[in-house]
Image (cartoon, helix red, strand yellow):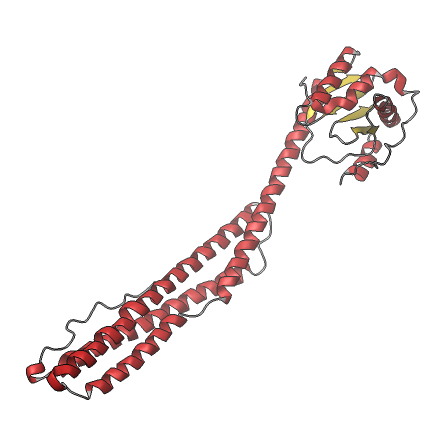
Length: 341
């Protein structure tokens, strides 16, 4: 037998078994209606049908589960026991008292066709006292009932853990789906990079106009206008502004792939839990994959255009100078942008 807090109710039953038959049922505690539990009504009816009942210490998780060979004996014993226990200042009732989580078994004893399983939580002081009193009053330890109660506790704990896991996995899957849907709605198809290409093309057009001025006096036009346009306008469009936007696009694609993976993993967890897949999850994944394909294709096409514009700008500037102005252009073309994947 284990000692513990759950058995308060049982102890008194053993201590006051003879008195239980004649003691009147105590009135309800003033100003305090009986606490309820989700299982109270159904469990009480089912227990009564099986020759079993439970009494509860009001305001506490301690309880005693009584089972007899005859249904009437168990119900009557619970009422008498509740009455006897309440004479000590506490209020015991056959109405269920709510308790969070498992109320573990403290001991199981038997006597005269009755089996009592004492349960309590935390330090189990109530249960330990009740179990000790019952044994002193002639009740005997019931190893089989004790084992059954422990197995029931283990099964309840396992079911509770499974329920918690399923609830957590369901929540994770729903959050992952919502996040992916948000990403799909935010898809811009490389909007910034496409805008950079438009800007570079416009600046290249201006460079062509400036190049019509030839070398200019003292090579000023070739060096400080057209050359500047190539290096610090069109070149900057590509190597700085567009380069940053391309990196951001690659990062966005990477994030989208990560969110697809998160949702797939969440879906796998639901399957392992025996739960159905989330409606719309597969469609969201398919949409995200299509967005990635479109973004890669669009961005790389824009990159090719940007690199070509920069190369053209440098070529115009470098070949503009003639005579004394030969070699006055910006020089070697910078390395262009690389494709994303």
